[in-house]
Length: 196
Image (cartoon, rainbow, N blue to C red; front, side):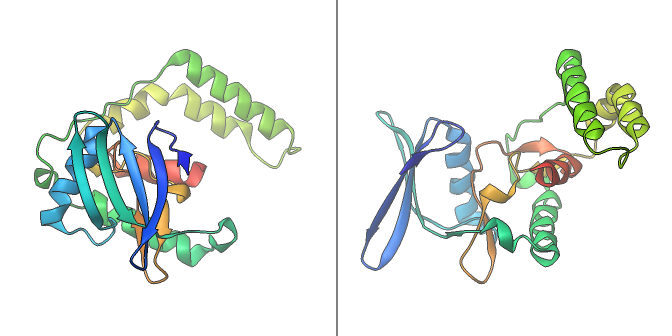
């Protein structure tokens, strides 16, 4: 089928009237999440039909295949539904996820400057529609933002919350790819979603 962005192998499988996805990954955090979710039964995590930690292949997950969401369907109502899903995850008690690591935001000055230059180029192509002083002010205060984002309270965060990781069964949204689950700030989830 394809390779995931994190290096997982994804395969389509079918039989007995159910289309499935088989995911094989070296990332055990996602496997651990789905083991835990057998007890939690979070409504926005797709059910796993089979799971195994194989010494030879790594983590094997078999899930029902859901529909990808066509980009043209991302209207304000669907965006609200996605943000609500993220807020439900971020509002869960972190104690439900024992051993979940805390993800600290570290600002790389070179990367920040490169990003600022790239955005300045984008702004310049739009002929004064955007106020570049806002970008300059944000860039000047990145260290302050990082300090704020690294203080509590922290909550469970997906870590890769964007439209390509959301699928549907026609009734509800499901969130895929839990290998970046960590304790952090929900604001980062939403800003990443908007940026994609």
